[in-house]
Length: 362
Image 1 (cartoon, rainbow, N blue to C red):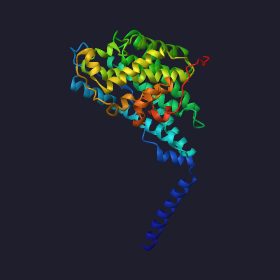
Image 2: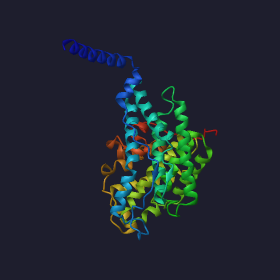
Image 3: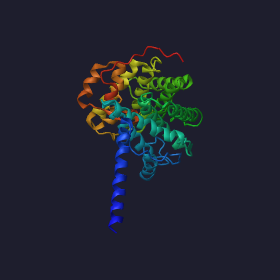
Image 4: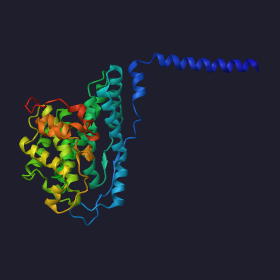
């Protein structure tokens, strides 16, 4: 019995030593990756849900609480995935240790690769699912862009990711050109699709996708009122200001990223964009500005501090326009962050000046 006890004890000691030895043998990047990444969720393959709004709401402003909850629940796994990726990107931006930083970046690439390999988001079964998925594709594309080409040995995975994103972007273009209603084809949903398609176009050097994004951005700005408000969003009753901000978020970001990639102004009349930005910020400080336009009190709480995620686009905006007056409005509120824009926008843009000179050759 004593011999059996000693044998069992020795076996446990040997196993423990083997585990310790294996851990010591791990490369610094592998060890860091094991400690810094999150568990990648099961890829979402299919989505099918109705509208968030009551069926008889022509302005899509009367929310059906049950339908709204169902839509949020269906999209939550994707949104949580993007939020987790954005957090990892933000950590990588601040990390000084090369091995740990690369571990964060590898986490982003490996996680998105698992979805790309599975061809995630390939079945949008309803009209509203098709409306909702482009903004998520854009969020994935931007966080991927921040980690791309940063870790050696991942090019095969990156090519698969880029082909997958291109398929989803092409589907978005097809939908908005052939199926989307007249309103959806010109409102904040088009702006989100534009950001996604433009980002994917830049990643793949696909000029057709880039041009579609540029034209979409141009149209959004051209349709804005002289005061900077977006008429289609102003029609959204009490939610008008919410949707004005929801449109500005991808619109400004898309223009900034297209400019940075060398595609000129990305469809922007920068002077009018400045008017739109200033209108939006003034309205957040005093939602009564929008109430004077449509006669409805707004759901947005007054004050920039109460709307930090919704004004995170101000970071790429000031990098694009050098609007120093606007910088003073929010500098004390930094950092500004929005997961669908890649996380910490202050870390991405503060102190940078984006040129809109045309340099891209494709």
